[in-house]
Length: 229
Image (cartoon, rainbow, N blue to C red; front, side):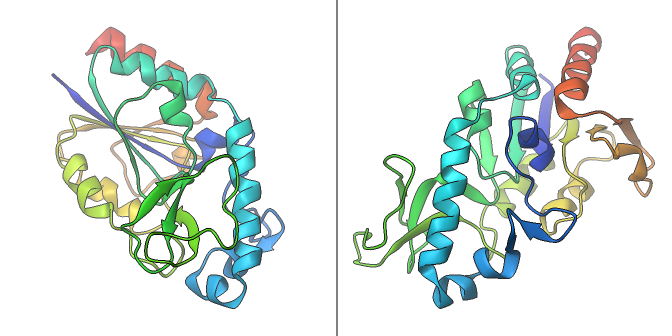
């Protein structure tokens, strides 16, 4: 059976109403990235960071999967599909996808601030200051911040090496190390990119580009694949 590996970024979630990570002004929801998405920010002002992610979590819980998420679920009904996502929301899972690897964590979970392997589901939409892990340390968002290692990269690399078809959705392939996954996909694998600026990725001349929003381009690619493989 063909193994279809799907790599998704902020563009697929944007159509569900979630803000992309970094706007054109370099800010995320009006905040400097350095103030809310680094270990240094957490050490300097954990209350601000916690508040920021509590708001993001509330937005995620209010959002709904869109046509792109749902199209990938249809693809899984006929083929082996593994999704690797840079997104910290759970929209793929809520749409019905069963194999999802989150490179940068999952905002609906919390983790110990001293042992990242201690991970817990968040009850409701907020992590409270004073809410502790089993070791007695403050719980923080289960999100990989700038300057932190990306533990899931090893598994993601292994998955990409097994791809028969590789699909990139809603990402400009600018954030490393995640963007390097395209380079480990087998040479004979078909590669599709769905993004409004897909055709600008000219360094990869073997890409089949769909210059569309995810909700339009992904159903088109899925229909094509289901009719041709």
